[in-house]
Length: 122
Image: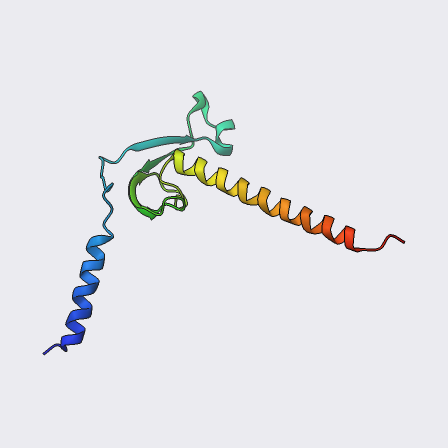
């Protein structure tokens, strides 16, 4: 028989999982992209035929957006894990990061000016 506290933990975990399912979960028919790879064989093969063809197929990727912290599932070609759910979040992150850099720069310059005022001129 299961321990009652263990059952409560399992139920709480199940409730947590249900809450984290993203609303924007969508699945499309996978897109296929075929790429012709020529490489060094292009000089040897006649008629500009590719050395081989590579086929890329999209697959659903679930990730958390670094800007808005939403869990998003998108169809993506094989690549590193995306950071942002869309162009708007990417631009907002860029603006926030540049503002953060400017604020640090202003603080650094303010500290430098204060230090120069405190130092006696020789």
